[in-house]
Length: 171
Image (tube, rainbow, N blue to C red; front, side, top):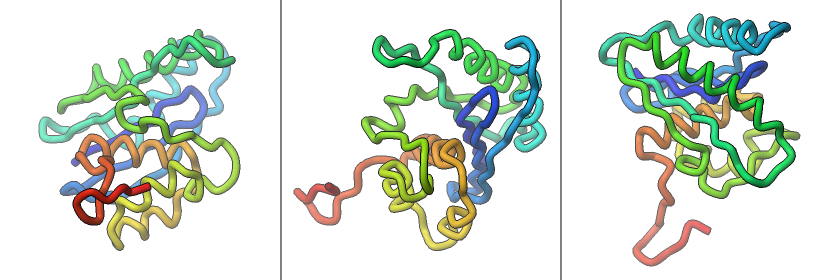
């Protein structure tokens, strides 16, 4: 079993893959207030309520936060994300794999509004799902969950560009 997590202090995406196929996806929300440590602990517990702590055979794929030199986001927010990733990885019984956003998503823009499945990132991910996985995908309503699915697909080697025939470009 593979669990993939797009961490956040308030709203995290979680996806599970059984035998390499998407089996479950949901958003996990926390309304915890107070110190960053309290909020990190609360979210880590909520995520673990979904994923458990894994077994020796289970993998955990996480988006590891990265500081970008440009942008208006508060870089201090990344400490909380690193705390969530560290707490999950520390208690995980199987292997944990961190992925930087640039490793799994490349240059696909994350849309923060509208239907996340119809965003450029969502459409790219949907093209990599089979019919049974698209049934799980139909219930996805969070950009965080879309990202968790993408992280899982990357871990499984399914986020590579697909070519229809030699020399063709996916576009």
